[in-house]
Amino acid sequence: MGYTVEEASIAIERCGLDSTVVELTDFICAAQMARAEDAHLPLEEKPRLNHAYKKRKLLEYELLKKKKLMRLGNKTIDEDDEAVHLPNPMVGFGIPSEPCLKTHRNLPEAALGPPYFYYENVALTPKGVWSTISRFLYDVQPEFVDSKYFCAAARKRGYVHNLPIENRFPLIPLPPHTIHEAFPLIRKWWPSWDTRTKLNCVLTSIASAKSTERIRKALEDYDSEPPLRVQKYVLDECRKWNLVWVGRNKVAPLEPDEVEMLLGFPKNHTRGISRTDRYKSLGNSFQIDTVAYHLSVLKDMFPNGINLLSLFSGIGGAEIALHRLGIRLKNVVSVEISAVNRNVVRSWWEQTNQRGNLYDLDDVQQLNGDRLEHYMTSFGGFDLVVGGSPCNNLTGSNRLHRDGLEGKESSLFYHYYRILDLVRSIKT
Image (cartoon, rainbow, N blue to C red; front, side, top):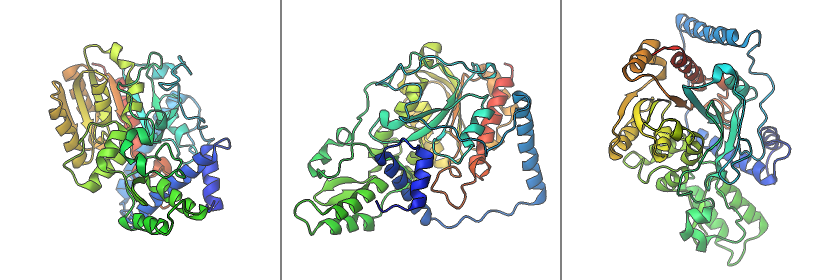
């Protein structure tokens, strides 16, 4: 099919031997797409760290490991252990169309809530990453879910949480589940030989005008169905870049408002920031319908509203999911490094006339015990700690800096654990 042995081997290793050819090719196309995005970026120069800084960071990490070892007894933390098995189909403990796959699970005593926690990251990571995440988060096993069962686009993610799993319910109205349901106007241009019904994972970049022009030129010489070799080239590009048909022999990337709709965000949620920032912010966000299905169990548990600590908030996926579920946001401490994203969340908060309090901070590394205790004392503690730390060093496309949880950005996971552990230990 034109893929290298290395690409095929990685896809089989990460997706499983029982995966279909379509799933394997979708994985390879997504990885190629992300690599193409990386090619346009300058090589990152790692800052030279002085000896004192490196020593302090090493000490902090060793303290975290020692604390975790105390919780685990004599178990050893090793990122090179066996990889967590990714299920196929990737439906977690249940999806709206099949809600009763599993209705109960036994959580370790140390993980029992409240407070509740909910952590998200990409499912396809280097070997041992999810085992390490699970160990740090009180030995709770991940729930792996592909958002293609909730909407018209794939999004393979792992979720570690201590929420109940019975009596979940989906957001209403249900979102479109196929490409043609999501974009009915493009049906008339869709060729019969393009059999896609779902889009691939929404990433942070789009195809260039040159790419779509090459596709148009490859098709313009054929009045009827093009030969198989041309079909294969076009379909590979369409899967790689999530292209849709918008005219005769004409494909185009999704517009930002179309991505918002696929991911469950309100219309124009990111409007007002640059087009590049819109794609980047949306590509790094939650899929709202998926997350809301998991968080729906909180509605009856907190009828008077919820106090939320949102780490790595992005453009407010968790906040919007809770709001759409009808759960009142009493107090939200939102921590997000991007000023652009913080402004998006603040704007949404004001546009939806939230009556609670929003406190926005810019860096999880600066959120210490004293500050947490101040917030928790003022409004009685947090009911839910939610977050998804950066996946930059976890994705298969990052050949240069795929350093796992020790990478520059993805090591911020340990701050999620640090802060969560503080929240669970501070008495209010």
